[in-house]
Length: 228
Image (cartoon, rainbow, N blue to C red; front, side, top):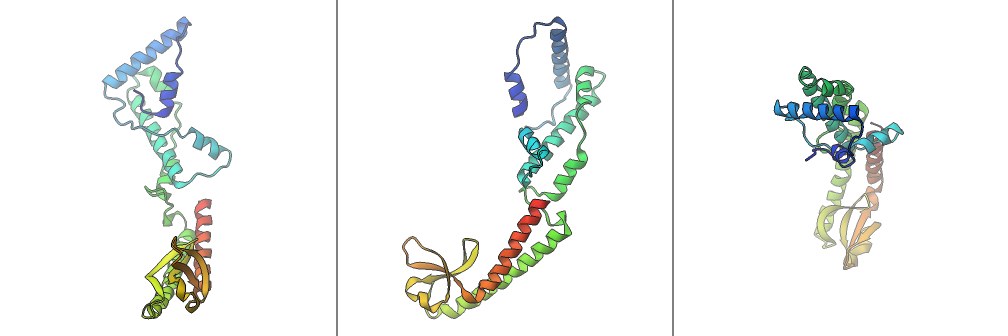
């Protein structure tokens, strides 16, 4: 009946106490726990993930991705909620409230994560002015290369060269779908072919530099996001 992976593990590892003082202490803790629940405590506690491995990785200078950071923020919020509930009932549950005193309030860290990471685990533009500028340039570069490809598509459509009149992505490159029998009519780099072999995914030579600029900005964005 536990609500978190850590408390489940603690429950499974419980053993009888053969020490009188230890047993009495555990009974007092249990009695306070029952009183705490009967008085409406624990109502705000939601299930949380076990973030101990994430914290261990961070302590070794490892980096956490957005979703992992959100898990840490959720755990911090749950811990802070529990602490405040025990402190509010200190007179009734002195032992448990004393234990709760040992929970460090990391609200500033929690808010820092929530300010920079959205609900999907993506780093927000406001995380840094540099990231916002890079993303703006990335969007502009993408628009430039797709507009150039669309002009090529428009010019080739009436010639029956294309399998589909859409811009596609293959191997992180922007390409157009060329019928294999018309391959020579579209100078460019072949990045893939359809399962039937009837369609080639070609990056026209005239957009290679534009696509390179877009990809360099995308990689720069990834590096900045990882740094944040």
